[in-house]
Length: 187
Ligand SMILES: C[S@@+](CC[C@H](N)C(=O)[O-])C[C@H]1O[C@@H](n2cnc3c(N)ncnc32)[C@H](O)[C@@H]1O
Image 1 (cartoon, rainbow, N blue to C red):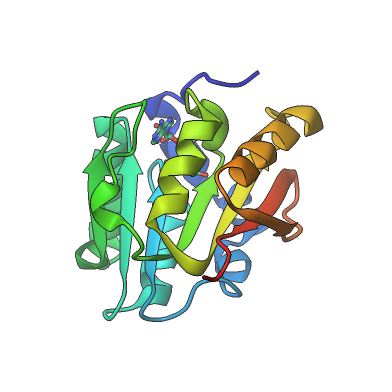
Image 2: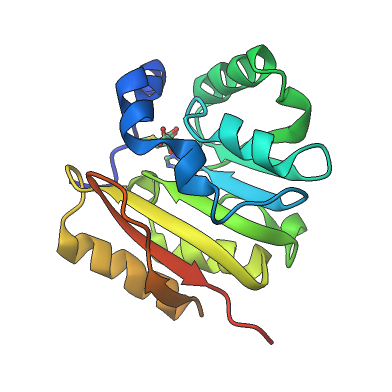
């Protein structure tokens, strides 16, 4: 069910217009992301949400998009360049076991983990790393596809986030997906 990595050649398929029409990244991200924010997007693939994130944060913000597959990142950069927002997005290649984000400690306003936590070797490690880089009060939007992830498996992911010190709130309604908002407490 989980832990298989989506192959790079699936990248363009994830950008299909039907998915965009159904999930509407602009509507989905609007309530959470604002101009000037620093946004972390682990597992961006070829940028289903990254272009929208870059548009919203604007020139005063930044997006850090981190993937483990060089060919996903190549496709992502080409798409960002075509949309004129390449300069707002820092792309990084990570190891599967670690995002390598210690340099971002305490600087991130919002994390988007869309259809990727189930591919990581350890949800516990993933949430420990992301919790450290989030500012107090920052949110992480966890989205997992119902087709891949059972309710039980999703619960284990949320528990891993709790163990990392994040507090769960109800996630938005996204068709075909399980969601949760995970907040880093203030102070
Ligand atoms: C199913 S795709 C989803 C892509 C994109 N978020 C979307 O919704 O279209 C999962 C992505 O996560 C990446 N990924 C898998 N394991 C990862 C890890 N440990 N760290 C960072 N990215 C990872 C994969 O390479 C792939 O690009």
